[in-house]
Amino acid sequence: MTSRQLPDPEDLRTMFRVLLELPSSVRKRAVAPLPTGVFVTARYIDDGDVLVAACVADLELAVAAGSALGMVGTPMAADALRRGEIRGALFDHYREVVNVVSSLLNGPKRPHLRLADVVHGVPDDVAGLAHRGSQRQYTVGLGPSAGRLLALIAA
Amino acid sequence: MRVLIADDSLAMRMIVRRTLRQTGVVIDDVLEVADAAGVLTEMIDFRPDLILSDWNMPGMSGIELLELLRQNGDTTHFGFVTVESSPAMRERAIDAGAAFVLVKPFDAERLGEVVGDVAADMAADIAVLRGGARR
Image 1 (cartoon, each protein chain N blue to C red):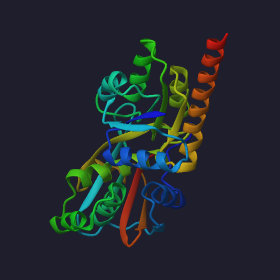
Image 2 (image 1 turned 45 degrees about the horizontal axis):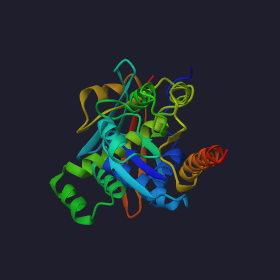
Image 3 (image 1 turned 180 degrees about the vertical axis):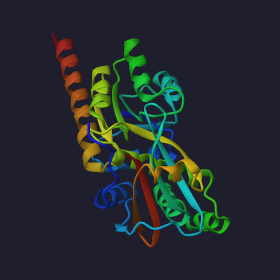
């Protein structure tokens, strides 16, 4: 059994392209404190229900990904950005996107994990992951939209 | 072929339905349900030839659903469309009677391969039945 690994940018790009059927780009960026803004966090747990990984997306990325998966019109996406909150069908669509991300965090020889929940903000337990594991930040382009993604994984 | 799609994500059900259309496999009818309970209802009402099910769903999981169906003697073709990809889970699925485990995300080519295999199995079963009837 090998240790957990953060997603490779190319694997992430392929996942977004195939899942969302959009031209996609994913680039690693220097790890830096998250700027002020609205973030949406997906938490992943192991088979003992322990938090072992998280993906923190800025609202722009969450809305773009959820909109693309659900083929949601621009007004709903614009409304979410204006409100500073992703909810309803758009939230459900984004939840499925980060559910699919778990296929990149799992692997044949890695300890199993699964999506537990998706919440607004960055909970304290997720911030704690940064201290007991590793993290990687990405700039993600989805069609005309772009956003920031932070992946954290327990050691 | 009548296909029943079970996934708690509306968007994923739409994607599976849309991608099925792109495979080239002849699909007569498609129905969507959001959970295992919906599948159990539609086993009587819709009578699918193939169930495409997520693994993780609220309530009964996809693998529990498959095991329940097989325990009750139901042999409907069953395939997983899931994020679960570990060898242990794949082995459990196949041991329980799944025809395949397709990992999300997937494209029309990959879906067409696994659904096409099921269509070929169905055609072979029909040929055997017809042969038996002639004898």
